[in-house]
Amino acid sequence: MNWLLARRGRNLVSLISICVLLYAAFFTGGDSALQKKRTTTRLLMGTLISITTWGVPEKIEQQGVAEAFAEIARIEDLMSRHKTDSPVAKLNHGAGSGQPQVVPSELITLLTEAQKIQQLSQGAFNPGLGKLIVLWGFSGDENVVKPPKKAEIASWLQSFQSAGGIELSQTDSTISITNPEYGLDLGGIAKGYAIDRAILKLKKSGVVNALVNAGGDLRGIGSKGDASWRVGVQHPRDREKIVVATEWPASPKADMAMVTSGDYERFFIHNQERFHHIINPNSGYPARSGLLSVSVQADSATAADAWSTAFFVLGEDKSRDLLKKLPSVEVLLVRSDGTHWQSDEFRGKWLGKTTN
Ligand code: FAD
Ligand code: MG
Image (tube, rainbow, N blue to C red; front, side):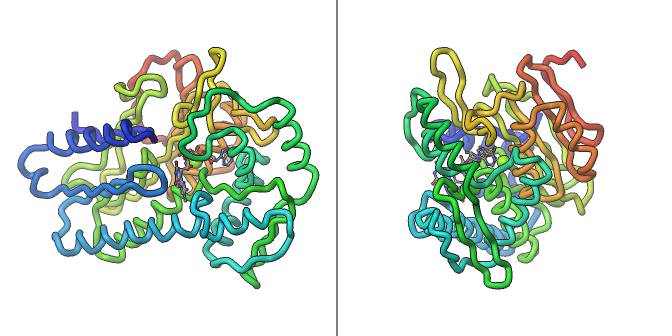
């Protein structure tokens, strides 16, 4: 089989292993694959990002890929809360002052989309959890070993829910954070947005066949010659196993994003309990919704990214209900017992154990 692997993973060892797997996958395709397929990988947004192209003239490919990576780096500079001089970090620094800060309009546009998904998901998706994420220690490379004290979470939750939040002004291009406990954190949506912008740059440069893979979050356009893009999704509990084999539509006009959120990306085990980085905004604790992972296919990686996080928090029943209102969103859920459910149009074959 010649599947790319949508493997999640963030430490350096796992990042290196992503490289090795992709490399191995690319060079099993015979001589023509060797001549036509090119992959470039960079470390950005705390994860490895690969751009693979197929059958594109070298000069066009080089320019398109360079512009796509420059765009991802630009978005990181704009939206990272890890970079102290980014507009997002500056907004967080002034949280609670209520002072409007002028920001690039692009940030307001993305936040407006985030708020739309927040509202549709009845608050399961919330881009304001930055301070709670720091409290939990899921912020950077900290080696967290135990959860924060219950009282700390309760106190944060009470302040967060009681006073204001964030105000956007499209006309003035300003954002003000009125609640000191609000921390803008676009970790659940901005990687998807960066993928979409990279695809736009590739298309503008004339690259028609490409797959952008940001740590397992993907968008593919076009095809791989006569074949479509095929990607294997990692088993949530066994890194070496592929649990879903997905295939992009077989068309030169194919364009599909697929993003996976799971409890195995950033986590620690304390007293035999798993604590992970996808937080239920109502409880302040890692979401326990009966799911191990959620893969979402959609027209844009931005939407797929935010919805995969939201569905993970919502759990199966609420997600399946909500899906009826989202005609261009398809889902595959892996349940805690290892079984799965997938929506009718989800483009993927389940390879794991199943009972439904
Ligand atoms: P997803 O499920 O897509 O998102 C989970 C993340 O979203 C959480 O980590 C948290 O940040 C946030 N979140 C948690 N619960 C919710 C919720 N209910 N609603 C909405 N959002 C929620 N990592 C580094 O280690 N170093 C870096 O320098 C770094 N820079 C980054 C810069 C940018 C612009 C972005 C977008 C990410 C960066 N990251 C960095 C990665 C980031 O910290 C997360 O690990 C990553 O975005 C999580 O993505 P995911 O696909 O694993 O999970
Ligand atoms: Mg997400």
